Structure formats: structure tokens, C-alpha cells
Length: 219
Image 1 (cartoon, rainbow, N blue to C red):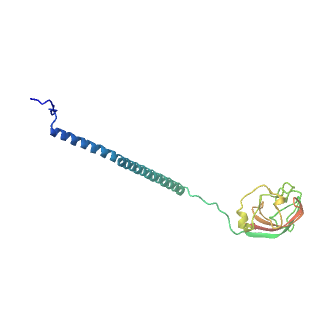
Image 2 (spheres, rainbow, N blue to C red):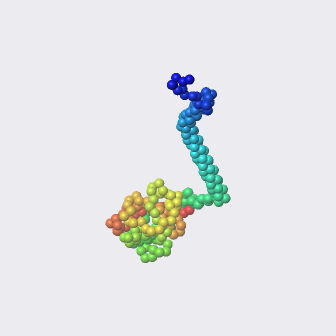
Image 3 (cartoon, rainbow, N blue to C red):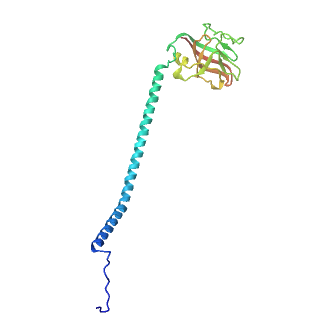
């Protein structure tokens, strides 16, 4: 007998225990999802740190390899140098034997022989190609030497200083000459002479004559 009201019949396929299990499963899934969300930044940081460490390790290995290659190259160079030692050129004697010293007054277009003991230095304006060592040439030629002549500072005004100057060609322009100018000369007999300008008579670029103090050494 009914009183006109209806009641919802329980689902035949659902039981209280199944509903409980469903809720627990949903809760577990929710926790796992939340854990994944929270873990993502941490995993990103860990992966970033690992990548940085790997890069640092690769750079360290590359630096070590570069150091090894450099040491091998230096060792190879040392072996080459040991097998082929550099022989230093003989600079020659530090002290020469003085042949003579004195005053030389050289007129324009004249030459003189610095290797001679003659009182006039065998000055001539006839033939300056054989024997004479210095010449006051034409205006554009300046002071010329048979072998070479070179201006030097006072600290190299010696036999050793002049000898180490080497071999030079050309001439010294008159404009570079003035009192106390020092000049190294290699003579035709391979001796070494030092000339110091005392006076210059005439125009600076066209001197009538130049007077020198001269010292001549032989090795």
C-alpha cells in the first residue's frame, strides 16, 4: 500500500564500499597531480644545474687538452733548439790596438787615408777611389767613406762601439754635422776610426773645410 510519496531506490550497481574506494582513488590522483605540479620547478632546477656542471666539465677537459697541446708544442720546440743550437756571432775583440790619433783638416772635395802614418793623411783631390777612406763630397753627397761611416752617440764612441755598428752604405749629409758630432768609420784596411767634428768652416751645407779629431784602431 502506498501513501502517494515515492522513494529513490538505491543503485543496484553501487555499494558503500565502492564509493569509498572511488573517493580514495580520486584523492590519490589529486595528490599525485599536485606533487607533479610542485616537483616540476625542482626538476627544472636540477636539470639546469646538471647541464651547467656538464658544460663546466667539458670546458675543463678542453682547457686541459689545450694545456697538453701547448706543452707538447713547447717540448717539440725545445727539442728542435737542442738539436740546432744558435751560434752567436763573434763580436770581435772588445779592445783594439791604437794605430794613431791626431787632427785632420779636410778641405771640400778632398779625401784622406786614415790607415797611413803620413802627417798629412795623404790628402788628395785627384784620385779618391784607391786607398783614401773619407771624402768631403759634393753638396748632395756629404761626408763619404770608402767602406762605411755612421753617426754614433757618445756612449758608443770607442773601438768596441764602432766595431759593433756593422756595415753601412751611403753618406752622411752635411746638415747632420756640427761640432762634437761623432762618426765611426771602417777603413779600406778594415781598421776602425772615430772622427769627432771640431770645427766646420763655410756654409753648413757647403763647407769649405772640416776639422776632425781622429783615432784609429786595428783589431
